[in-house]
Length: 327
Length: 168
Image (cartoon, rainbow over all chains, first blue to last red; front, side):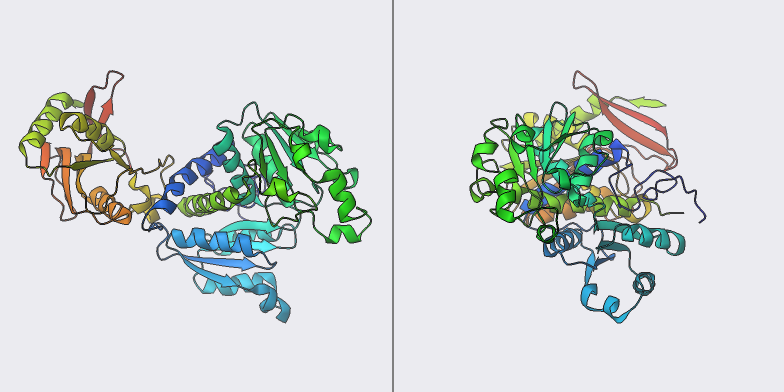
């Protein structure tokens, strides 16, 4: 390694965001710049021509080692609206199954003149490995983490912060409840980091004891095991997807029992502030973590999150492309 | 540092705008930030009804690969239908013509205007593209080492200052 180990691997020597790997450790100004740049991309979707020429001639590779139609599609739309050339690699079904190593795949794509890699991987830390490799061997390349294992999903954290800012105007004085499987959720981790850095005074983690990781209090989070208590007087409720494989283990009894204890119903939503909004990163399990009446109700901003996600990803793609390189 | 009388130069520009044949209804579009200030003044002067359109041409600049995105991009806002409209594009200083090129490109992504005219407070020469303004407050040939900056004080008065250009 040529660079110092203490430096945040996402930032170059001038402190510019070169990769987006995790919200954790990013300065507040970097997050605020992403949110304010996203403002400028929101209007573009309403124009006759929905793209701008910013990344013309650049090659963006979607490297999804784990399936995710929604995240891949919104990244693809974001890159196309910036006029980049987008290449989708269905790695689940190609080189990885032929035994090619991750870094060999990266070297091959680098030889194909890639400019940006958008990486989704089941293993926590995989985007870091790629970023460390390209920073050394191809310092012009940018890596964006589109979700790694149980670690981070930074663009989801940013789009959630963007959505909250849109509806609540200001992060100060807010109470935000994140509800569900916090332990396994990269979305929860990224949301908590983003909201804490942006100055939300009360972030709550709500869920069964078996799905709450240790060390939440040290992150400045208030922990609740009762949903009623956890959503009381909240301004924002973020429901997490309950992954069905958790049910097969010993962590949870059944979907119906989970819904009885931790499903967001209209009755429970009524405990929150009257103007509270309900968010969900998708895809939703109706009747498991959220009741259909709530998911489709007036407080739900779940589809708006998807729309805002495109503008936020456009902002991230254009800001990392602005960095003067890793050396 | 040399100060120019921005208000007097603006009066020249406004006078020429009144005399010049400008299609009615006219639509004004200002380029962030100085162009927007000038367009707002011209809106009152020329009794333009439609709200002033605002362009931040950051996403259309041709120097993104060299300079990246500036840190504060503001949203472009055009609240009228660009298609078929007669537009007076307003900027503070006309130099290389690259900002005007970017602004016209962005304008066309909102629709196909019937006509686009250009008004600038200062034409300082140094063109790198075939761009000309129909309305000019003052023409001052300046060397590339000098930059001209328009500012607005709390009383809405405009000020123009010239300073040595740093490394840009």
